[in-house]
Length: 378
Image (cartoon, helix red, strand yellow):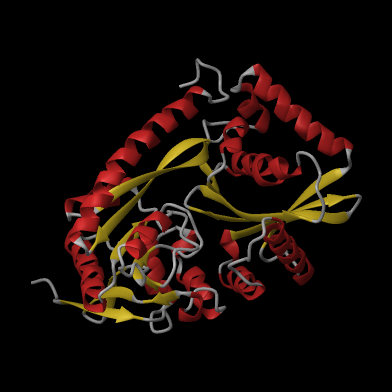
């Protein structure tokens, strides 16, 4: 007889051993206990910043058997699946859109499972628990963001509405070296990338990859300076603080990489990457001054070269950015699932999503027609 399961809603990961949580999270670096705990422990994802953890967890015989990253949100920032128009429609109707429930990794537009359980009944129990929290708290909606397609289909079967988005990902087609990757591109794009890289070399700009164990406090301090400067340049405020980056560097060093660009031995730019499950994820970057082509080299070419050298299968460079297409990153569909408590708004959003999906499909087809690879490439 299967042991009866117990659902507990937790406002912190403190009570859960990292090994137990990570056994469910697998090799996704963003779902690791250390990453999520660092977000809360550093003050970046807390009730004070509009992210109140309320993780459904499933226990059987005193052991963790399932979990879901879930937050009560008082805004829509840091999600990358934009529902500001939905919130505005609620406001104009005299209704409150916030708070809402969001299953996601804060500030992280990377696809990964949200129902952390292998057993179908356990996964159903986790979703039921999340929807029960939604009903008991009276929130407007529940959103599961950047879930895999298989999980999205599972949620669709439970009555949730599906939404698609587009990111740009690089796939490793068994390249041995960076020049193999370039050889697969058409002449014009290949020539442009070589020129961009050559100009930086001629300007005396070199790059250093650092793992978390070899990066010094000065390296992290410089990266954080660049990170903040990039947000200031875009008239925005960074979500993360230096304590968060220090925490993940110390608690999950095997997943964290820094890249530093130097000009005549002095640091010029820096970027953060996470690695896991055969994938390299580009997250944040910044530079102390503008240099033509430096962004593309730091954020894309160096990352692709690293992925090839390490035998990684995929490089994800984050959200948005059609300019990534010319650098060999192809459009990839993303998935989210949504439940709205208000029946009329739910029907209106369903109509909107059907229309949006057709537009996304056409947009993706147009992008693929503009791919920089030779036509004979599959």
